[in-house]
Image (cartoon, rainbow, N blue to C red; front, side, top):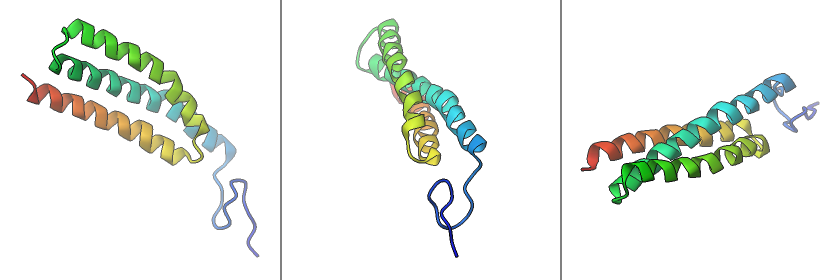
Length: 108
């Protein structure tokens, strides 16, 4: 007879609550920071490519990242599955940083 675990799954065992909490906290702290950092870097590169002064582009993208950081941190706790949170925040941060590096190479 199969019984539902704490997470509602029928098959397999659910992860311990401490492990789930630790995964969410690390996603909220490190994943959201990486995502905001990537957003700031990519925004600065795009602003510079669009013709803004470099200082203005960095300032504008940093202010945007400052608003996104707490939202992304809270979202890491609200997402139903922590793996989705890590994929979006961690993967998105890596992709944004890579895109900013590529934009810096391709740009003038």
